[in-house]
Structures are given as structure tokens and as C-alpha cells.
Length: 213
Length: 213
DNA sequence: ACCTTTCTATTCAACTTTGACTAGACTACT
DNA sequence: AGTAGTCTAGTCAAAGTTGAATAGAAAGGT
Image 1 (cartoon, helix red, strand yellow):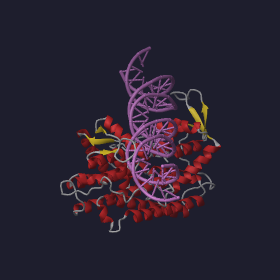
Image 2 (cartoon, chains in turn brown, blue, yellow, cyan):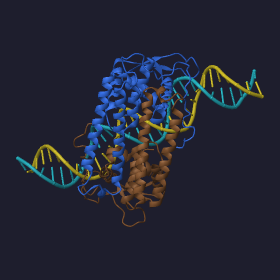
Image 3 (cartoon, chains in turn yellow, blue, brown, red):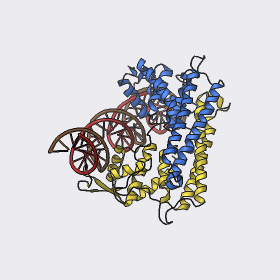
Image 4 (cartoon, protein in one colour):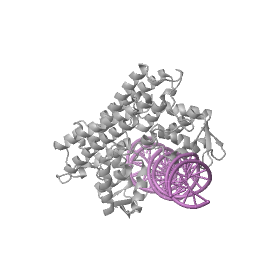
């Protein structure tokens, strides 16, 4: 699973109704262009695809109000909302070391009730621990990991990343349990969208230096 | 950059001459199906694409010796060798948090001289540190990261993963400097390929349980 | 008034990835 | 000797991703 659908669904949902360019801007505002494959092409493709599959409803809209070609606005259908929450829950639980998916999930985690968020993250920790156990058990030869030669270093790497991921999750759980952030049904949500016309303080300029990927 | 080309080039190179199914088996032997997109389709596609681009030379080979359709064997061209080392070096230095690329690079790191390996890994550490500095500098508002709400948690996550990646790299460097592993030009290399007919102790069965991705 | 740049919004072709499918040959059992 | 199962080897259509290209409108200079 890639992060793009979750991101697009979540972004459209926050607006109620949005066109591609708005999504693109929001994702940039969240820094998603840094950690996900949220390029224009992918966004428009996801919008069209999900419209075709009935998760989004496409409204044809007159030539845009501010220059450029006419734009299409999208809205979540019921199926879209269901899919959104399915992807959101999955992104928080599943450990497949896809950081972009987890990041997207964290970005929308406050759409869930606090208790469920904690529950999902705890399940995540368990999933990581299970993964770790199964990997160390299956991939370490009886005569010790040295037998793997430098290939064993890859295992080291993955395990260290898994441990650090688990540790971050535990700390995050603690912060949530201590009352951090505003979750679903707890009053004014933190909104991470740009209002029509609001300027984006983080507009594509982060890489300023360090642009050498 | 995806890891597949590096993996395929490296695997073909170790055999001297190999067909798709052999590659597929090697990658499975290394556990690459766990941490990379090395599915059959991708492997065959990469082989054909690179053959078309002159990095591999395709030999048509008679109906296989052991059942199944006729197979095509591939060999690295000079351009292929150059591309292999280019990708290998890039994979070790670049910090774009693609674990599969780094993993592939580590898997082939011993094809480089020990000194160069250390040099590249040190550059990697520097790249991570630069990335970290630029992110914290650009994305933290003046009034503290709390202003970002739960979005700030994503930054926490990325930074913790970066730190753990840097730490692993430093430890790996230490081990190499202390003489671990056998690098290019240091005698019998550690070979991670299966000989014709040798059985694969790690054949697709690792997920045994924990298969729920 | 004219030209250049920038912003808005999207499209497209080329490439890559996915997962299911095909199909021949050997293996083991009844 | 038939046949169910598995191993070998690869293909293909559908989906996703990338990066560049398009095109109208407004802003800003000369």
C-alpha cells in the first residue's frame, strides 16, 4: 500500500470539497513532498482512479477563479469515508517499514478517538515485536550470525530501525495518554489545511540547500 | 532510485552469466523479497530494460535443462559494470530513507575496496547530519515545535529514524575498520549465491507465521 | 502598450511495479 | 500407467509513478 490514497482522501475530507491543486498545496504544507511520492501526477491519478472506483465524487467546475485551466472538484462518498478510515487504521498498525504510510497515518491520527489511536499504536508495537522475533529466529543460523558474513549487517540494520520505530511509537503513546493533541470529539480540531488564499509558509523551499538527493 | 537495478546487476555479476530465475532465487536467498520490491515481474522487467539500454547482454538459450520454458541468460557489459558501481556507491551515500536501496548497497559493499567503503559510509553519516540540521532548522517554527500540533510528531519520527540510521552507520564503520568482512582485493570473497542445484535454506518460507501484511 | 515571469491547474507519455496467469517437465503415489 | 502436485521459467494486463509539458491569467517592469 502506498501513502498517496490515504493522503488524498484525508486532504479532500478536511476540505469537504477540493480540487487537485488544493490537495497538492496541502500536502506540500505538511511537508509530504519530502517524505512521500505525492507528486502532481500521482495526486491527479489517485483522484481520477478513486472517482472511477466510487470513493470520490467528481464535480465538473467552471474555468477556475484564478487563472489556469478549469478544475474539477472532488468530494468523499460514503465508500470514500469508509476507505479512508480503513486505510488510516491500517497505516497505523501495519509494520512494513514504509515510513511514508506511517507518516500519513500520524498526520490524520487525530481523526480517530483518542482511545482507539492508543489501541492501534499498541498493536503496532506488538506487530514490530513479532516481526523482530520472527526475523531473528528464522534468519540467524545456528552457529551465530557471523555465518551470514556481511549479509548479516543488513539484518542489523533492519533490526535497529525496527527497535527505533518501536521506541518512537511507545513514546508517542505516552504523550497521547498524557493528553497531548486534540482527538476526534474533543473540540476544535487542529486543522492543517490552507484556507483559500492563505499563503503557505513552507512552500517548496525547504530543500533550499541540501537539495542534492 | 529503486533498489531493483542494483540488485539485478549485482546478482548477475556474481554469477558471471545468469537467467531471471537464478536472480530471483538469489534475491530470495538474501531475504530481498522481504525488504525490496524484487518480485518476479520487476526482475524480468529490469533485465529486459537494461538489456535494451546496453547494460546487459542477452544470450538466447535453448529450452531449459530442467523443465519450464526456455530461458535467456544475461551478462554484464562494460557499461553494466560501470552502472553497477555507480549505483552501488550512490546507494551507500544517499540518504533518502529508502531502506531497500541501502540494504542492497550493504549487500554488495564488499565489491569495493575497504577504504572506499569506509569513506562512502562516512559521507553517508555526514549526509544524514546535514539532512537533520536542515529539517530541524526549516520546519520548526520560532515558537517551538508545539505549534505544529500532531504534525510535529511526524518530524519526531523522521528524526528518530535518521538518528538511528546514523548510529547504525557509525557502528558499521567501526566494525569495518576493525577488520570485519572480506573486501575487494582481500582474498576469497564471501559469495552469497546458490550454486547450480544447491538448495536454498531460506526459500520463501520466512513469513511462515506473521504472514499478515 | 509590450514583453517576460510567475502562478494556477492540469495532462500526458514513458516507465515501473504488481499479482495473477501460463505452461512444460519432473516426482511420488496409487 | 495415470494423475495430482510441485518445480522451473517466464509473460501479461492493469495499476501506479515520474517528470516534463501545456496553457490561461495576472503581475511587474520598461
